[in-house]
Image (cartoon, rainbow, N blue to C red):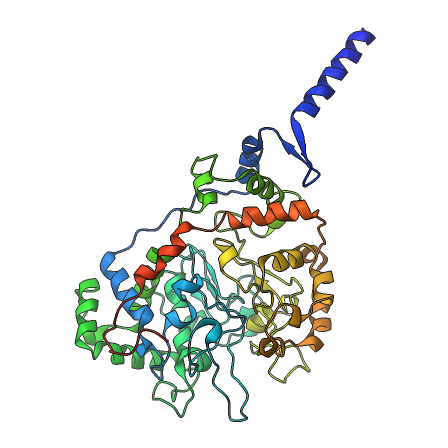
Amino acid sequence: MKKISIVASIFILAFIASSCVTNEKTSTKIPVDTDAYLADLLNEHNVTPITKPKTDPAKVELGRILFWDKLLSGNKNISCATCHLPEASTSDNVPVSVGQGGKGKMTKRVPPKDEHGKPVFIPRNSLDLFNRGDMVTFFWDGRLMVKKDGKFLAPVGGTPARRELKYISPAGYVLPQDLDSGLAAQAMFPVTSVNEMRGNPHENNVAAIKNWEWQKMWDGLISRIVAIEEYRDLFKKVYPDIPADKLTFGHAANAIAAFEIEAFTLTDAPFDMYLQGDKNALSKEAKQGAILFYGKAGCAQCHTGSLMTNQVFHNRAVPQLGPGKGSNIPAGRSDGTWDAGRGGATGITPYFYSFRTPPLRNVAKTGPWMHDGLYSTLEATVRHELDPIGSAKNYDPYAHLTKDVAELYRAKQMEDILSFTKPEDTQKVTLSEGELSNLLAFLESLTSPSLDGLAKWVPKKVPSGLPVED
């Protein structure tokens, strides 16, 4: 009986050993049936193929034209596309953006200067627009959110009681509640920002409106738009029952969102093909990287689901670069260079320096990375994610940024940022260089080949007659 048990034990051990192979490059045991093992991980993290929402072609066309028309900015000098260019993977390729008054585009864009002769930058990195149709949390600080009942929470003031809500975005009563989606609501914001699109109070009639009178800003812009006959015709195709004088900027925002959904919802990356059943769409290295992503590396704890984000906020010890942001800055930090992230939007102390988990589709093409673009390579970004505290303490801006941008680094704020971190958000994960290489291969597999065709959406001209190019 003992002899049989010993033989059986040997057989079992041999079976276990044969079910895995050791990858010499990574020193990680990878199951022979990698696809079956990965399928279990994907199921565990609720990863399913992305579906593209249906759109109205007429609404898409209207939104496409509006997206490139500088008429939507106070000084008629910047459009949505200035910071969300197809050739820059729907962003602008710079760490912190340059808004109204800037010249040129992407890395060659020159910022305007303030009254003291200092260059003016927009706080934070310009977000990409991929697969945003089903998102419920918008902007790095989540200052716009969609509640479970479909209504919006957005950022202008708010009582202390509201700030205690779990999903607070102070002041949802400002936004129209009949917008098509959160993405449409998001399109209502940039036109109200002085540095992004609106301009300074002395420069135009929209900018002269008081900061809290958003509705007057939107009314001024839609009046400007429908004064043009070609726009009236475009709107009539989308909203045949609404007279031109009853149109609102919300109707324009709905169209912009429809365009973004149609143009930038991409479902043909190798990883998408893999999810749709093509087991040969991913390389061996990418599959091993996916197993790390959904396993040992812990990436999927936050980058979960089909959108690869939990849409929640975390302080990942990201150093501060560029201007400040938010009205609820921690006491004693009032020089205008502090960005408290989610805490700045809500006033909730545990959220200070926390930012929303970004979705990762096309992530290899959407750099520079982090909310302030302080990493110029995806590898450096991943290394930070694997060791947030160590990376933050050793961050050298001149190793990642051009000299002029590196000077925007706020070294004095690092200690404060670290003081608000939580152990669960900053745990160190150790990977071999081979494992890191495989993880990067998986992230590269999230890149859609359709990126090369996005230029087809750029109009040759817009109804205002303003130049399309920057």
